[in-house]
Length: 146
Image 1 (cartoon, rainbow, N blue to C red):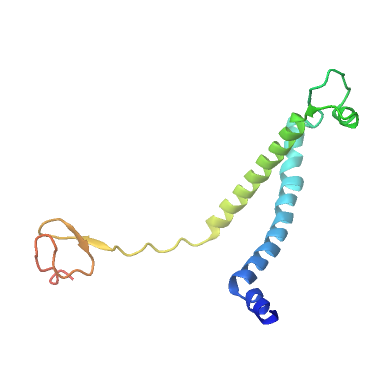
Image 2 (cartoon, one colour):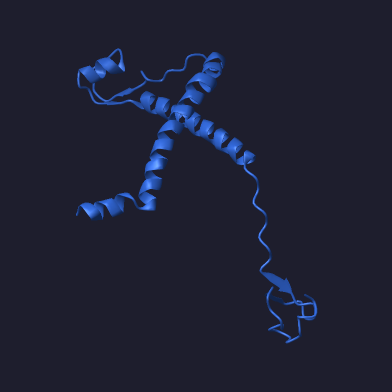
């Protein structure tokens, strides 16, 4: 059983997954710093301090001054403000990741285009494989062109 576990743990895809998790955790810190330290300060300055966390829909008949008070009393509430905050945070993080990935993709060299797999027969204008020596449609000899 130990040798079987060793084979499993040392397979390539398990190690790749482990490396991916470690790099993902480090990347998470970069994204959080980008959002919290670079994007949010100017956004907060422009929009003002947006906090929807205390917006809620009280489903009980008893009025409460805040969401915390309603939850402490055990009242049924729909905390749509927290949902809006989380949604806004997600959109900001997703946009930051998009910008980061977009920039990294610009730095990558573009791969060379694949060579064509087909060509046109000069006699009947049908499409034939590049390696064809005779056209399958009109049976013309295509070796003279190469």
